[in-house]
Image 1: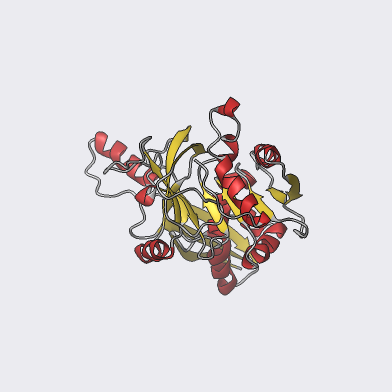
Image 2 (image 1 turned 120 degrees about the horizontal axis):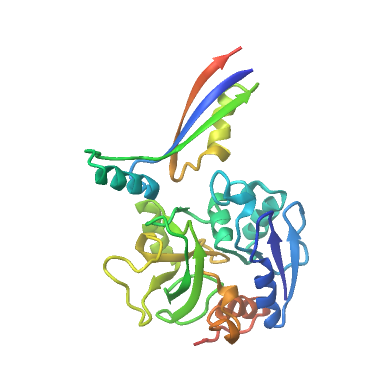
Length: 236
Length: 77
């Protein structure tokens, strides 16, 4: 299986993503934002960072990079696309995912491990049992997810809410468990078809015990199994 | 060539963390402030007409999911 990792000017997590998928035995190659070809890739990753310096709005300029037309076509054909952190922001700006990501409540840049509870969703990028708690770090200034009430209800009905911030035991605090003020503690969502996934936490930073845990590997291994046609298995 | 002034603000009902923080600071200073909304101010010089400027706002300069915008023509030559 071959991953394409898109590099925008200002991306800074592309090497971590390549490391993470190579650990799983997959091929990975960088795709420059000026490129216009994704043929030969089985999955595409929009990595974290500060594309175009986060000028105007996070992801607003990257969304009009030449490669993004191809990413939209790739996603529309049902192929797997994941946007991590800045990549998630780009996916919302490109309208591949609903809603938007605002400045964190409290105006603080948040960089720390978080606990995430897997919701029952249609997402292709996660095949753990609903209720499973994953420990994956966040690192962002604009992770405060928001959408209008109708969109939220539709996403709930269609199983598009994939991950929510929670405490270590999986519980969510009444005042909110998100480190950034996100609506209903939302950390990750997918499109209706389940092939496009966006999340603020960085799974590529949690794939090796040396960096504090391997829960992030569940995200990449899920899509590898799916593309390879291996029946869904449960990773704990 | 015309010069446009564009004001981008969060839509009604969208929480504005920098605005809320500035409001708290103004209250601490003793001012009776009800609300602070912080947005963007953009100056644009272009040969394009008002319709094209509106399109620029809808496509790039504002995100209609969270923001409203207002265009004012500052100068026409």
